[in-house]
Amino acid sequence: MKKQITLFIILLILFCKISFIKAEIEIIRITDNNSNDINPRIFNDNIYWINDTNIFTYRDHSIIQLTNNNITINSYDVSGNNIVYSAGQVYLYNGMTTTNISNNTYYNSSVKISGNNIVWEANRAIFYYNGSKITQLTDNSWTGHEPVINGDNIVWWGQTPEDDYDTEIFYYNGISINKITDNNTYDYYPRINTNNNIVWQGYDVNGDDTEIFYYNGSTVMQLTNNEMNDTFPQISNNNHITWLGSDGDESEIFYYNGISISQLTNNDYLELAPKIFNNYVVWEGLTSNVIKSDTDYEIFFYDGSTVLRLTKNDYEDLFPDVSDFGIVWQSDREDNEIILAKIVPEPSLFLYLFLGFSCICFLVKR
Ligand SMILES: [Ca+2]
Ligand SMILES: [Ca+2]
Ligand SMILES: [Ca+2]
Ligand SMILES: [Ca+2]
Image (cartoon, rainbow, N blue to C red; front, side, top):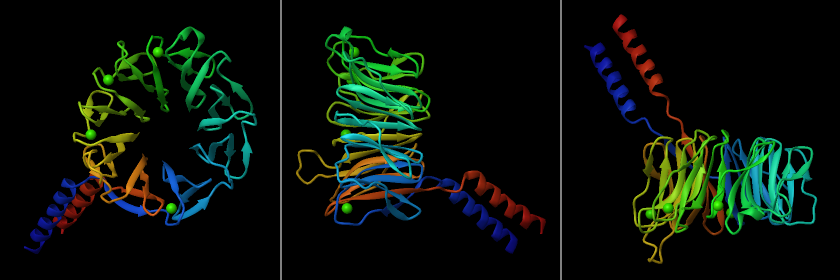
């Protein structure tokens, strides 16, 4: 009889655990000081942000100051141990020392890094540093803006003299520059992933509103076709895509899983700033009707199956970023602080099944 009861309890626990397997979240406040901590990024389990004029990181439960500047940082990016930032000039911190990479008389901005390769915008042109020398990728009669990089593959938006009034998406594959678009409407805001798949927003043929376009390495697909603006596309390394669209009134979050498009939000308030990592999507949402004065932004997280609301407070929670480790964002309290929502990995279904059936076998044998 005792054996039957034990068996029943094991089966009940097994059933409950299997029924409730999903992402669990642990909220951790990273900073607690009297200055502004802003623009957080997360790469694996390493978190970075800007505090006033310097970049900080959070590793193994402690905060480390990485740079020692008193100039305003306008952009930064991370690849492995390399941190690159633009503060007038472009600086590379390789984990040990800081070097001025750009060394020019321009105002340099929009810096991105992949391995040792760095790209940025200066004087309406695209500059590329391959670890040893700088090349200006755009001819002086061209314009180039906001480059992104994967390895030695670089994408930006801009114009050549043949483009007349509108802008196109340009792709440098490490050898030559090709146009991905060639039309009479504005194309901009490209993003590239580790497979060299590219997304961007561009006006449709009528030039009325923007759509989302996706280059899968060989062909261009138009993902949206509607009367609203579709903006800020992001692509993950498994080729999933998210963006801000609209169902008629204000913005909503949309998600393309490689096969079909789904709408992740359906409400009467604004969504902004989507980011994606594999099947995870994060964004900020203005949680009351925009006409009310008591609204503030909260952080939302799509875990691949359901949307979870991560904050519910009177602070502005902004600019979330996501990895498989967790979600980070800035929260405006007395001043801005960095918050982490750690995704607590649940033991897998197979582990529960294995443990459960091992216990049952042991009991039956006895
Ligand atoms: Ca165009
Ligand atoms: Ca549209
Ligand atoms: Ca909305
Ligand atoms: Ca602070």
